[in-house]
Image 1 (cartoon, rainbow over the protein chains, first blue to last red):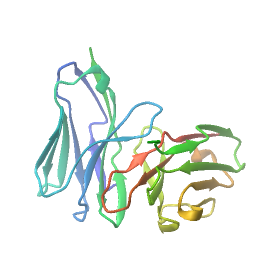
Image 2 (cartoon, rainbow over the protein chains, first blue to last red; image 1 turned 120 degrees about the horizontal axis):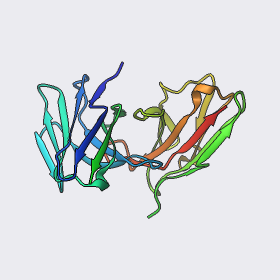
Image 3 (cartoon, rainbow over the protein chains, first blue to last red; image 1 turned 90 degrees about the horizontal axis):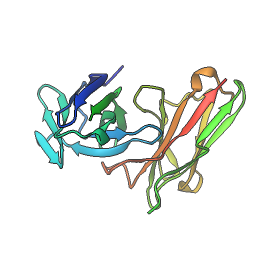
Image 4 (cartoon, rainbow over the protein chains, first blue to last red; image 1 turned 120 degrees about the vertical axis):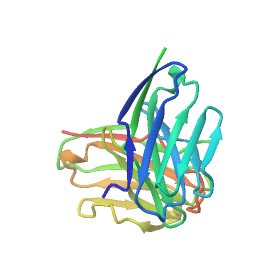
Length: 112
Length: 114
């Protein structure tokens, strides 16, 4: 059972564009929602995370929007740069009880 | 501060052969995870340790996979015998504890079974 569904599978934007990646979850017990960035040949690295008591969190050019009633959350990358080209994974966990469950990933390409 | 260290980085073996992966977590991190990442997919949890205790191994294929974390520090993941479908990246990760702290991943061990 896929508990975290991610879309789109791939995304191409021009430099300066605002790519948006969406995730939907099923388990209402999830209470921690991070986004990870992965470059080829590297392990995933935490980008930004949110808990369900807030609807939005911003760190630099990265913003998470969270809709608890719809069980959805999304990542927005403002002023995207070619260096942002990577695979992005959403994830969800239950603090202290269940480790991260990852989405299937979105391969982002930012063209110069 | 050193990150999560994994070895070997790359391994090619024939099917039915054994293989082992080693992980040294970030110093002081009590929680250790092994994930498997198939090509083009997200990581999937195999096992989670709290110190030396395996607290979640429900996704570990126990007929051929085994793991240990002696002394609650570094860990070894073994596959015996390997099958073609085991080709994947095996990621080790660690966190201070399981209370919601950031999980840090190593660079992974790339396994190809031929």
